[in-house]
Image (cartoon, rainbow, N blue to C red; front, side, top):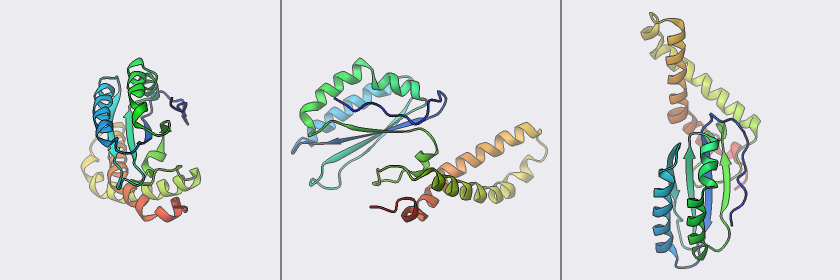
Amino acid sequence: MSEPLAISSDEETQQVTAIICHTLRPEREQGYEEWLHGITTAAHKFKGHLGVNVIRPWDHVYPEYVAIVKFDQYSNLKTWMESDIRQEWIARLQPLIEKPEAIQTLTGLETWFTLPNKLQVPPPHYKIVLVTWLGVFLTLPIQNHLLAPLLSEFPTLLEQLISTGFSVVLLTYLIMPHLTQLFCKWLYPFP
């Protein structure tokens, strides 16, 4: 069966990401792809499901598939993970895999620090804090240059709402991916 679902936070309103690894038996790729399509379709029907990304193996020497499953909050992920429907799909999976699935769950800023093809333990919290601090520092001049003139007539609360939303989008989609790549060797010193 699967390992217990580990979680680093019990906040109910925080997006959560589960990284699930499957090592396939030889020549089971086609069956696994069919299974993957079926379980992904089933997961999509659950409340709070935000999507699944799949990283396929680069070669057949080590045939590990990685599914990155996102839900809007932990309770919805837990409902999916413990559901009878998922358990039925996991039972169908057993003839296709060599060992039980491995599950890692991320709930906070560490999701900014998950690199493609570098599925490992997130960096220490102090490194996450320092790189995030740098990221926020870099957003402020951009935000002040672009938004300050446009929002000067808005009420303070609305101005803060728009500014913080802009900062989060900028951090998530532009700044943090580049900083994570730039500081990759410091964040992940071991291969």
